[in-house]
Image 1 (cartoon, rainbow, N blue to C red):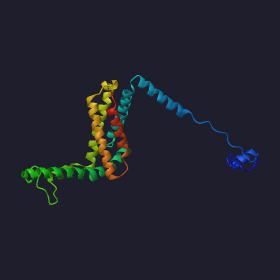
Image 2 (spheres, helix red, strand yellow):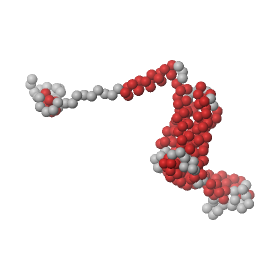
Image 3 (cartoon, rainbow, N blue to C red):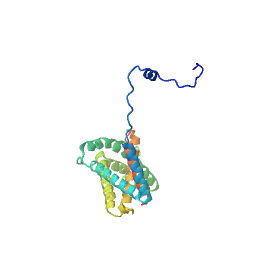
Image 4 (cartoon, rainbow, N blue to C red):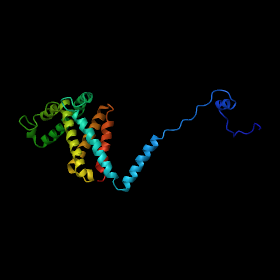
Length: 234
């Protein structure tokens, strides 16, 4: 043919060399793996069957309850003062909570109490005296009551308190699996535990965002799972 046709496909140098018989032969193509297709198909089929049987939301609630209960139970036990079940995890939390207590919640609680005391003392001046409920404020405006409460917020005390809340709430949610919760009915104590854990995860996300340490992803993911469990119909 002539040299005018610009629309033809120009073979690559390797292709031309292979056509001419030179160079090494191209390796044979490998068949793509099929396990992921089987897994996706099985999951989609299971979802469709459960949806047709009107059990999808029930199964999702049970799975979320089981996963969240186990996670919060293990995490809470490792925040105990005696070292917990897994020492590396306990040591990790022991290194994180000093900043959470001293840099986030201690000044936040003291500032909030000072604001409340100042407002109430302006309405009832006797509350802000030496013999009053709040005590006489110092030169910087800090009330003794706020300092006493702030002194109670230590890293060990805060970590232990958070761990106990997580263990108690996880236990209530896990017990609900053996009762009405496993049959699609809401258990009030389990739902209350869900709300408490959701608020706790919000507080942890706030703490890590204030510290800017990049550790907010895990409590945020757990919070999304708690929210999903709470809004799913029974």
